[in-house]
Structure formats: C-alpha cells, structure tokens
Image (tube, rainbow, N blue to C red; front, side, top):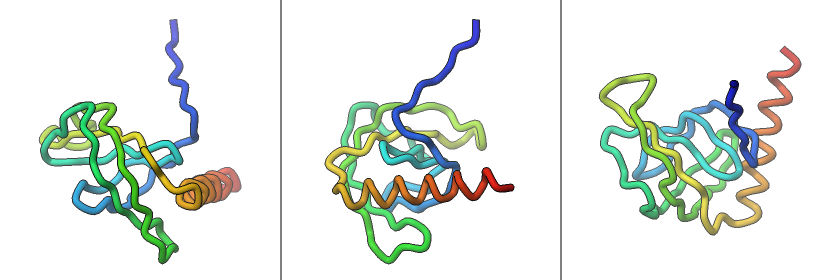
Length: 109
C-alpha cells in the first residue's frame, strides 16, 4: 500500500539562511526543514530569524522542533523539521506568496 504524506501547506525546496540554526532544505508557511551539524532535541523551541530572497524584511518567530533525522544529503548532517509558532500574519503571508510564486514559475517550465 502506498503511503501519502499530507501537509497543511505546500513546500518549496529552497535555500534560506535561518540565523543561528542553518540553511533550509525546504520552506512552507507552516515551517521549515533545516540542515544542521548537530541534532536539536525534538520538542524544543527555538528562536528563528530569516529573510526571504528578494525581501528586505526579516521574519522573526519561535519554532518547535517536530522532527530530527539523518540527512539524505550528507551522512554527517541532520535534517530538522521546525514548525513555526507565533509567526506574524504579514510574515506568514509573505512566505505563502513566495512559495506560491515559485510553484507557479516552475509550472510554466
């Protein structure tokens, strides 16, 4: 039987630097997956600050570590899923627009 993964928000594979955490593998308006050298404990909350490409605004929020696993890119790294908490509506909307605009651009290719 095939398992399908259900997500509340579409994800975009992209690289955005999250200050004090690492570089993203993907981004959605609900959270990010970040590549890190040391695993972060599941359930912990972290402070996040990042700037979307083509934006001058810095989004700041808290996030909860919801998943930690070995990286498929580099066996010495870890992939950490972080759910956004207390993200300002304007920042959530900016992320949603960014993800949608990139998805729309890719559908034209």
